[in-house]
Image (cartoon, rainbow, N blue to C red; front, side):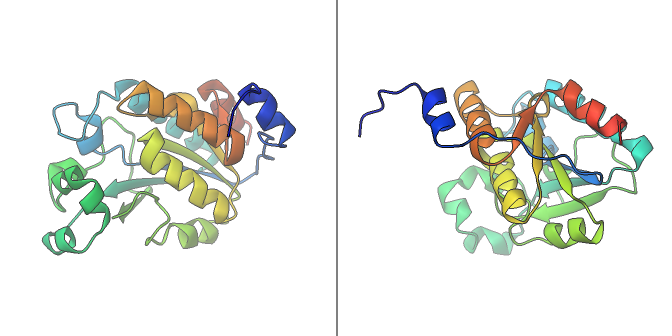
Length: 210
């Protein structure tokens, strides 16, 4: 197959890239901004200082309206090492043992006792967890997804949020990756088919207007 037509024209002709209606009961899902991903000294980590700062600003903007916040973290027990198939493809994830500092949520984030924490073993925050039921119980109608990595767990979470019936917003300053290419390609793909990629300013204005 040849790809002669400009990408934007191809996607527009296919009817991709429309926008969601913003709901009145959003939640913020912060994907895997744990020490293992935000500490560049960790084998899996990168310097996500800007992402952590932007996410903290988003969370604080939602506090006055009581916007629920869900943090996720990846953690594996010794038994998981021989049973989780993903570890065959990405053995570096074994550096996230349950109970270790690596799986703790980055302390720079404004986490409170009112926030939820979901532990997962796969890429998507929805797969094998109770996240969908939690959001349904909170009567959430829109999900803002933040975190790391854009091309991995963020993208998987966005796809599953959509497939679980939630319109999705992704503030671009609130997601990050280990490399620029996969990051930008994933944002393009999300905007085209799975969520609305927006600026942090627009996301904050949305939350403040609730």
